[in-house]
View 1: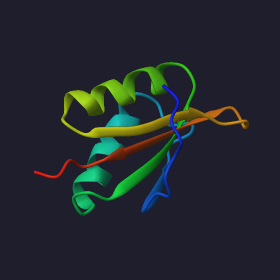
View 2 (view 1 turned 180 degrees about the horizontal axis):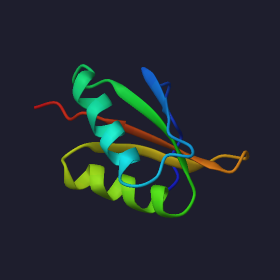
View 3 (view 1 turned 135 degrees about the vertical axis):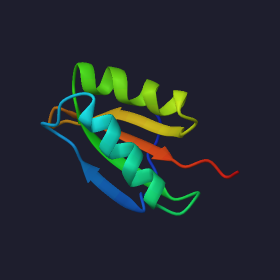
Length: 83
């Protein structure tokens, strides 16, 4: 999945954070943000980028973009849905 990324409201650097802690920290951060704001999460390759987006989707969050970075990590943009 590759999209043009938007300017995030906040950024969360989770490089080096193992699963499932990276998912838990992302979810907690999103729950503290206002509805509709965009969170950018930096994730390692492998299990983090494979698991975190799917887990967030399953919880009802909106994945707005996912791109690989030239520095070897992934940039995930996610949003709390408007209810």
